[in-house]
Length: 336
Length: 290
Ligand SMILES: Nc1ncnc2c1ncn2[C@@H]1O[C@H](COP(=O)(O)OP(=O)(O)OP(=O)(O)O)[C@@H](O)[C@H]1O
Ligand SMILES: [Mg+2]
Image (cartoon, rainbow over all chains, first blue to last red; front, top):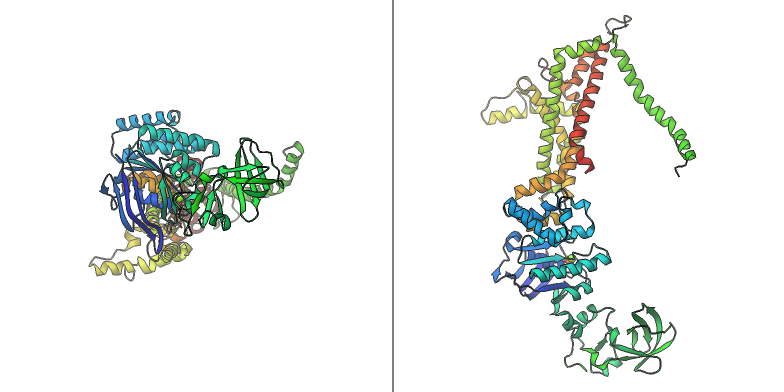
């Protein structure tokens, strides 16, 4: 079991409030991802759950018991650190088994578990090496191995892939997803890479300035962002925001439309503009268009759309896919 | 880059400095070796004659030599033990976020700046003096008899003085190493529920291994030749109780005016220092290239 509940959690360092009144429910076996801009408090929130920081208010419940005053080791959670935090003078075997050794598990049993974990993570040939003799990806797997042998109630990951190169990141992402799926263990994962968030998560928690902006499945956040912040944060390239006349015409203070929900044409359409930059990447074409009276609009066309900078283009937003926001930046329900 | 020509040029350009350094080193050493083979006594000038290894034979069979050798090893070993263990403990304390940490650090470093002669005098006259010393006063407060340190515990007294001088150095190096201990590793250990004792022995101590090696190597070099502290306090006595090799060589040359014998002693000391150095590098050097 690994059900985690945050009730009105607060955290202040001195008089700087870093986490404000966070309520969150993480179900057993769920993969939850915290995303948000740098400095919004993702790591702090994770560390509060881990017990590495004390809360200044609110409660943290694991499987229904309040653990706010329980030391980290007693919470039954494992953490994978951004820098891996492997012990450099110990072999991979000792690193993975360290937690079990501290828990007083006999050597035989410990070795069996370590070897089983190494098997799962393809680390068997490296068990007797030191961390310094491993590649970045292998070190990452050792860090994960250290987390899984303890059979925790939940895994906590703090940007575990940010030290890896792009290709390896994709591989490890898949590996983590597969592993979490097989083990069925609850996972909380911090990242600011939204592709990671969208692909891994059952549930995404979008944070900004220490507060939860929205909680939902990846597609919920994509289709129905609750406010301007989430709308702008989820999706790449970013959603276009238009204020003024065009928004007022639809009864909103701001309207948003994603680049992929704009149709482009050489001949006719709602907004007439001039291409400023055109990026042709083969599978897609990204056009940056200056539209008089509207602003700069990004559009994405599937496949090749042969336009050059300086040429004129007509853009038509998909009316079903226009997001409307009120003056406070909150989404207005009943779109259209 | 490394063509035949540049290499030759490089050698030619380097040659003067290498030759100078070599002469700088080899001339005194050569002269010492030469003197060590002579009968050469300052009280008897003009009678120098070649005596082969006789000086060595005298020096090495002199019971004073073995006493001095033992004293040297005890002194070096004890001071190393005190400074390394004490240094680790103080560094652990100073790594805690305590009030006035900056001042404490400055005070801990201070003894290192006091020259050996002065610190030995301070210890001898202000601290360990059996009548007017601070220790005697404290003992008096507790109703205990005062200890005459340099009469009853001469070698221990020297060890204490030298250890006091070297403790700051060890502390400083170890503190620096301690502060470089990775914060996330600390937290990982916390998540694993590592008890403080295991944390220290399994994680902190291995992390400090390299720094400890450096402390041992550097201190050994200096401790093999402790001299001022002995000269100022005990003069090598009582008897030979505090005579180390360095002091023995001095006694040979300047108290007995025997330049030949002293030179032989000096060469023996050099050889011994090298043996200790090789031994140490073997023993702890593997920590340095890990
Ligand atoms: N020990 C601390 N003392 C004071 N302020 C802190 C401390 N730790 C974090 N903060 C502040 O709390 C805020 C949130 O920090 P946190 O590390 O949680 O951000 P984050 O969302 O993880 O950012 P990133 O994506 O850059 O890792 C930051 O403004 C940071 O300056
Ligand atoms: Mg962070």
